[in-house]
Image (tube, rainbow, N blue to C red; front, side, top):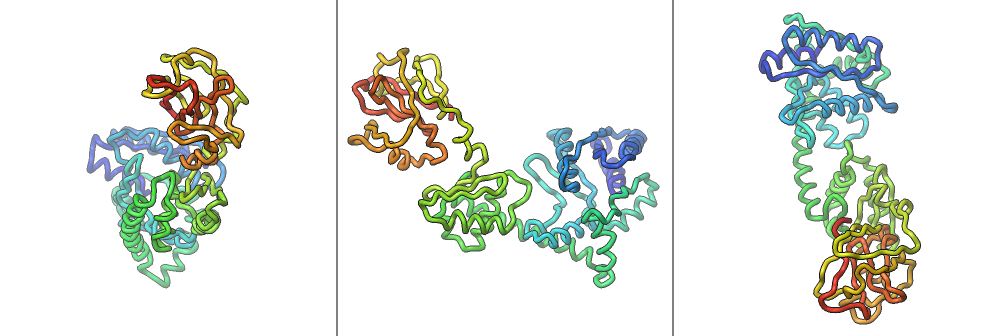
Length: 410
């Protein structure tokens, strides 16, 4: 009912600028027939209409259906379009109540925004302040066709249970409950905007989307620490983590000993402490040691034209003020993986140093050190390939006007 009214109003206000999309979730037998009704209505008013069937994944049905629906919206929305949805005041009040019962914070209680500018698209909800009773009266006066989805009255679903079982009880005691809950959402939106401004300031001060500096983080108040960690852990996900997840990160990783190499997995990220930083890693990043294939030894040839791809990245040959002798170009050189205990006289340092110490000083992450490879000619070490690039070793093959491998792509 609300969607059909919205479609009629949008067409009346913006003729030639509106098109409709009907999402068939294929969860009910007559859903295809409902699509035909929408198409007939659009044909009558000369509104472009698209019917899109989607597959809803298993799991939380309401959540998975929403995901399938928005995926379809993104698939068909054009760059200069706004997605207009028919959520009304009761929808907003139900959302506030359900999120309150689920333990949501300020961001959750902010519920739906009338204008929701997201990264991929913008949503407009022009009916958000209008009650369902007003919508029903309007539809009756205009004699608009519509279909009541039977799942809207099925108490098996949380929202339907709230609407059919709980709503009347609460309204008997609190007649203005619906408008009060909707007003509360507006107040929470203001509070959430302020919190986001503070969190963004703290975020810029403490790090970026991949890491946070622990010394700077711990200068914040406990409440601001939790807010920042919650926003940072969310990453590219739809929802923020639970408070329990934030507390686990603080207790098990941030407050661990500096040398403990603490790690916590909260799907889908790994959180790792290294020195005075905490990092958020994808599974692929953290478990690369188990998936990378590194030969025990391999032969390489360097030329000025052909790049060489190694486990640490893609390299090209570049002239250098001080580097390897041109005699080594186009000759077989050997690569060995780091096994531990190596001492190397790196160019620019005095004497031989443990390679492990050099890796620590360069802050190369422990989960990437397996990608370190040593370049050698016979038994002479020429240098080290690391995730940060090539480190030249002092040897009899070094000279002024030489060459060095240059990292061009990690």
